[in-house]
Image 1 (cartoon, rainbow, N blue to C red):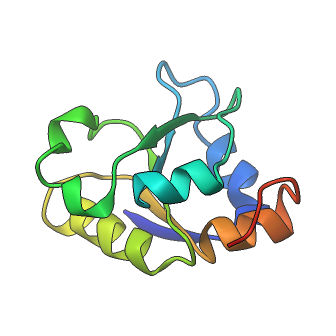
Image 2 (cartoon, rainbow, N blue to C red; image 1 turned 60 degrees about the vertical axis):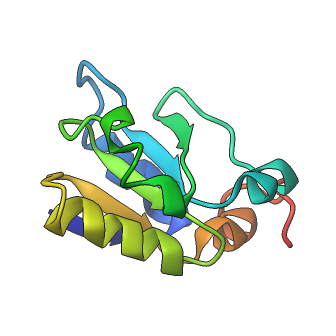
Length: 116
């Protein structure tokens, strides 16, 4: 299933997986330089994994299709494309797009995350 979730509501989405054996993943699909400029910190609710959008197909084996994945980019367009790919082409079952991306994350969740 594919979901759209605002950063301010991510804890609620992640909460449905509390107690699962493996934590959900926030998949940052921005370029390496972007992640160096601004990044989110993993938490007790999720692991952070960074794979640029252009490398998803070649690195797909690094993702577990059984784990919930919330895709993140700068404003939400790249992460939307990756989320759709994961669900429609790669057979992942529980995927979300973090709408508004890291820019919205900074405004809604953590103002210490720089904007660019």
